[in-house]
Amino acid sequence: MPRNPETVKTLVTGGAGFIGARCAALALESGHEVTVLDDLSTGLRSRFDALEAAGARVVLGDVRDANARASALEGVDAVIHLAAQGSVPRSMEDPEATMDVNVHATDRLLEDMEERGLYRLVLASSAAVYGDVDGLPHTEDLVGARQSPYADSKWANEQAVLRRRQQGWEAIALRFFNVYGPGQRSEGPNTGVIPIFVKKMCAKEAPTLFGGGSQTRDFVHVDDVARLLVRLASDAWSHPPRAVYNVGTGKQTSLLELVQTLAAALRARGLKGDHLIPLMGPARSGDLDHSMADLAAITADLGWRPTVSLDDGLGELIDARLGHGV
Ligand SMILES: NC(=O)c1ccc[n+]([C@@H]2O[C@H](COP(=O)([O-])OP(=O)(O)OC[C@H]3O[C@@H](n4cnc5c(N)ncnc54)[C@H](O)[C@@H]3O)[C@@H](O)[C@H]2O)c1
Image (tube, rainbow, N blue to C red; front, side):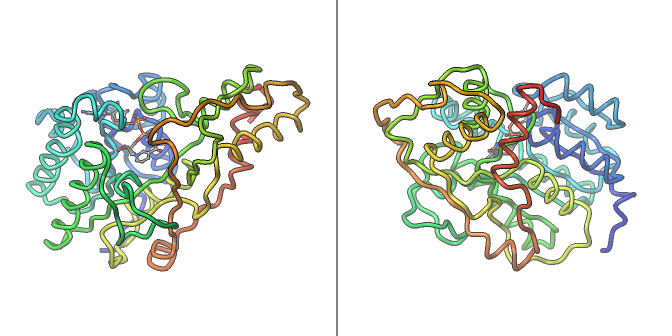
């Protein structure tokens, strides 16, 4: 059914999180009526407050709680489901809690949506589902053995999306690669290598690379991700043939290259010193993997491509931290 973005009423679960807050803000700017549901377990109260001030309805609650879900789903017609226990190490420590939040609560949310006749769902999966698959780039149909309960939970979410599509839902799962950008925390369980390195190097501390920094990641900017999420919640449904799409850049960057790019950007801003040269640590088990999205499917079926280059995205983060504006 064609939709008028101005009338779309979108629930963003995990809306006080890194990706969720950016997505909820963009949805508001795009004219959606926005509700955010978050228990602030890793999300921030300040993001909640900013979204509320910008016009969002905020529901402080746990997606596992039926009353919180009912309140959040009131008057909604599309759901962007991002709330999750998103830390791989935490999922190893407490697999049950991860399954509870990521799988069981998601299944309950989908049942609640069905009861209300809501069939538009955009769900966050993860490149973690590729596990130990050989070869690059990662294509959606070829996955390896999953390496964590977190990866298992995202795989289960994808299967739920697949089942719902078979019942006629307008549902899609997106395998995010390494999302980075403004607002990503430099500490806590769901941080990333970019905010950690930017913080350190701007504070004149050398970053440490383990195993030579040869492991690679596909870093995708949060604005590109948010733009896709909002669009999929509001556009006329284009009946994409797949249930699952990669969301990355199709480029791999080694951690050594990442540090070198940051160092070059800092030098260009007049910062000099030994801290721009990384310290080298021993290889750590599980570190030497490579990651890169194949974007053929999402480009062909959804016409989506990332627009923010890593140079620009890193420059923006450095400027923000050094107070050079932005
Ligand atoms: N950041 C990445 O690089 C990345 C990569 C792959 C997948 N993902 C997925 O994207 C989604 C968003 O990730 P993020 O990076 O913004 O992480 P985040 O931790 O910043 O955001 C998750 C949000 O969900 C909330 N939340 C957690 N458990 C909840 C619960 N039981 N009830 C209500 N709210 C709850 C948290 O408080 C937080 O605000 C997650 O599903 C994550 O698994 C992220």
